[in-house]
Length: 409
Image 1 (tube, rainbow, N blue to C red):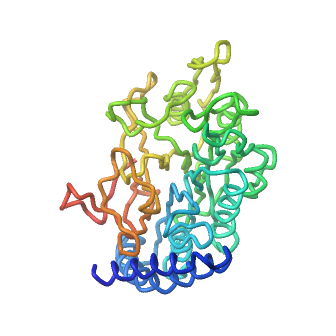
Image 2 (cartoon, one colour; image 1 turned 180 degrees about the vertical axis):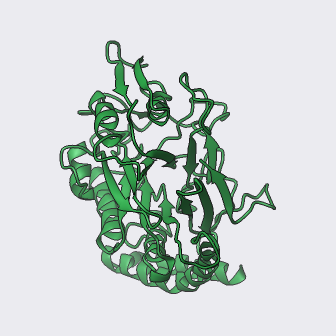
């Protein structure tokens, strides 16, 4: 820890020595300092994470049958002030991509569940988002998927003219559908069949009617696409579904009784989970969901899944800046014959972005706790999700928190 603290101090000193230099020279020096100080830390974290991954990546000791493996990052919050996710050289983001692309890791997909940027003036946030796209997508040689988060359109009172439109986000992130920021992608499962990733867009409004910094908005068009296309088109019995979304699917609780204690949904929080419950139950749903802000703008879900194929695995999300998983309860059409729907949250990538309530994992820059992301091995035969971690994961109030966990779905 002394070595890490010294390294961190040297980085800060170097930064202030360069105050008289040009902006580009400062950024170049930051990059050199980060590369030097974090290389050894990455190697140690990588070794530990690889050892854990190797223990869950196969279904048995013969190592002949692989599970489907995912690296899950969230809330990267690239900015000009972060040490380890500075947009000039987002070290933690780069580490996650490097980890996922190691041949021996045999990762099948990497996902990022929103909040790629922190908020600032439009010129700067455009640079932040472009840096995220460059470092997450350009040199990623495995399938890389993402969904938007509440920070990503930069709709803030502090910077009223800094809003990033859907088209601007789409263009920078090079999303597969140029007309919208939601999509699905099928990825081959080593256990047979495919994993279908459905990426939702919580910023799906035509302009800036709602403050999506604090409200998740899903349009009627997106809901229709989810029920009629994403959950049906090309789906076979060999498909398993994972949904990417930023906000936790729980009711808003200002007292932090749920993980949704900062922000809310424009429509009922259970709208999408109830659609998924109808899909899982091979039943129909015919229901209106109230718009809590605007009158006469409710959303209508009318889908018939009686002959649906495939199965639902889980949701992957972020926002709360903590790593956890929970059952989704409170659905009006809950099927008691099935296990409850599961949602897995991944913490933020950098210590500069402190969680308001649930982030009890100690994080320090230039240390083994600087970075944090989740690694999953999904067994579609046994319907299990094996969970492990890279970097920080153990809450300070849970000394016995396991490095490897397993849940059924």
